Image (cartoon, rainbow, N blue to C red; front, side, top):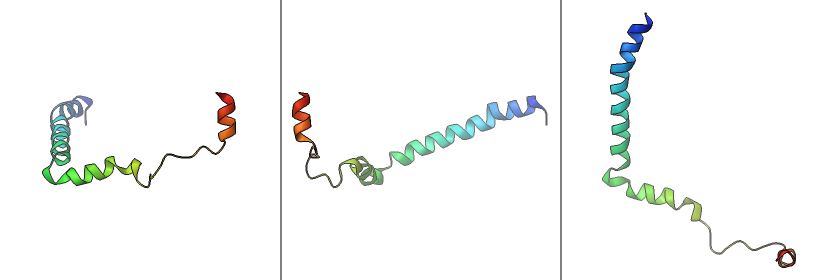
Length: 65
């Protein structure tokens, strides 16, 4: 294979394939049934968080103020 042939393929068919992949991922992420999945992923950092973390060295924190 020649470099120019590979360049022609990359400029046309690979570009088209990557564009179609991008459009497919976009529509897959915005599909109607995915809201629950996205809401769950967004709330992962807040799970099991009932109260703010307690400072283990309260006296040291007051001394720095």
